[in-house]
Amino acid sequence: VLHSLNTGTELPYRFIAESYHSWLLWRKQEHFRCKIRPGVEITMNISNAICKKFGFCYGDKVKLPWGEYTVVGVHGDCLWFKPLSGTNQGAWFYTLSEIADSDHPFELLEKANVTNPDPHMRVNLETFVQYLTHKTWSLHIDSELIDVVNRLTVQQETVVNVSTQELLNQIQLVLQNEKLSENEILARVSMLKLFNAKLQNFLEMVDFGKVNESWSLAHQIGRLRSLIFSHTKTKILQRVLSKTQYFPTLQEDEYLYPQHLPHIKVNRQLASTAKDKQEVLERIKASMFGQVFVKLERESEYNWIRLRQSTVGILDAGQRRAFRVTFIGEGVDDHGGPYREVFLDICTELQSPVLPFFIPCSNYENEIGENREKWMINPARCSRLDLDLYRFVGQLLGIAIRSELTLDLDWPSLIWKPLVGIEPTKEDLEAIDFSAFK
Image (cartoon, rainbow, N blue to C red; front, side, top):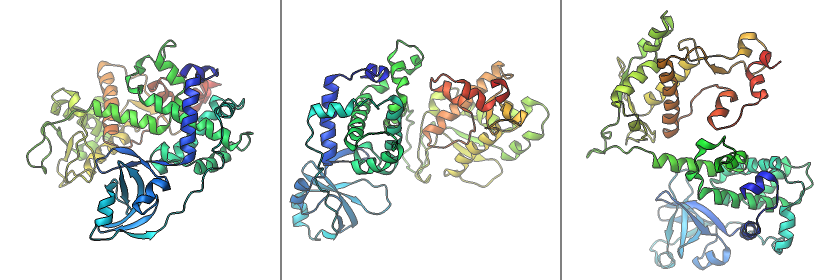
């Protein structure tokens, strides 16, 4: 399949047949993926024929003894309900006998609209193949389809829950100049959905360190990165982060942080004076970046694996962390705010004259071209200490990912592309150095 999509040749027949089956199930719109209270996702059957035996239909709003809920389908011969309120609490189930014998009747508040059967269901495999192999299809158009699904997945949480009508409404705006029927579009998206489902089974076992080697599996997948749903990439990333996570020893008192969670003390007043120091090394030592580097190196006992944790304290309001922070001379308790503030201060320092590791791009210096706000790696900083500190920048990126923090780093594609194995182009050079490009 990877070879066919990379070369534009015919897809394997078995894969096409599986795509056809997936297409039929999707058009029936009888399945819904939902997160349940233990935190995992399961597939619900939402067909009226299955749900009706419980006295309700998918989407019905129901008043239970514990509040207002919506019906999300049937799984394991139970009817599942999800809270209507804005809580992240997952769905929970009740058996038919529990619903019938409850002391507090399950009251229907609002009936859901019943979906009519899809008029295009009666399509044979041969016709489906014609939809799938339309001459218009290309890697670029497939990428457009993926972009639309990604936008819809933000709202629906998972690709499975994106309805055919939602998808068509969005795609027809994007592909309005292409002569493609609704069936052709949905057939192609079904194939891409199955492709992503197959990838999920083995993607985390691929060595992406070989992504630039033309013979490697990683290279074939890398060329098709635009055909992989954001949802697929995120799930793989989460699994990898989970498997490489460091789990510290918990304390008996749940209000205490785990053992081996680094605790650093930094001086923000000292950091504010860094810009006034003449010597570069003195500026680095005084900066928030330099203080955190020294303290974490000491607190982790030179074992950086200890920073691969994402602990959530009971008073931290859900903020994941790899270390605790105390601001010297400030009466502030770190329940998430000071932790985030450290990363914010470091990003500000990295993109300022305080630290020498990143410099304004040439377009800024020459006052020409676009992207003048971008910062480039300083090629003059190449000593052993400089390389260690650049490595620490990368470690902070990893900590931020595990802590679910967004870093305000205004770097150009010339930095980001090599990090993910994409060859930079002349357009990337133009974006930050128009004079050199000319």
